[in-house]
Image (tube, rainbow, N blue to C red; front, side):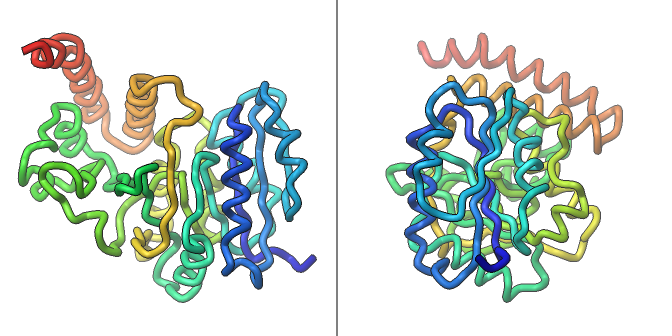
Length: 296
């Protein structure tokens, strides 16, 4: 087997069938037929039959089995350590590759040296567009997010949002309808050049889940300020979302934890204090005001 040009890293935790479907969808990418690649699955101490089922698949698959769940970022770093490709694709287990999305993205990145990475257009199960990434968090756009001001018309045009809206939101934003550079993308599908991700030593191990991809993109941007990260609309994947999470509230809480950690590492003490205050207001509104409004 030739040395891989592309290494695809997948972190699994108790999603056996979904993971198998994801890997099978990789095999349908016709553009990869002539491209040496490897798939590295890192299993975070699953209690289902994930490892056994993946072992039955035929293909260039390596498996790392952890004795405990070490989190998304650290597990990806394990895969990165044994990977050989010049390009690294971080791929969630709950994704399905459509229309040769991997090879399309790889072709695009290899022909755009001004970019360090790119992502595909993420689709929900019903094929509607799913938001993916946005702008780095600062006290202005996080204030807008936590106070739900970003849901109002024109606010996001004044403050570049942490989470831009999808086109089906009532404001009909066109952010995800065209190719463009953006600050960060989700780890559901992130294709990056090996030298950039290894230069910053991959994910920060202090993050367990949520926020780690944004923080890593920030460090890459600090190291390589002239290089860009692109959102592409032609390559498409389905992202089921939250397959390993038990509720939306857990996702929100962990995302807030990730933002707090980011502020602790990269923002001033004043901004850190303001963030905690804003999160307290957000939780109060969630607990009291929004429940009341739903009953009215």
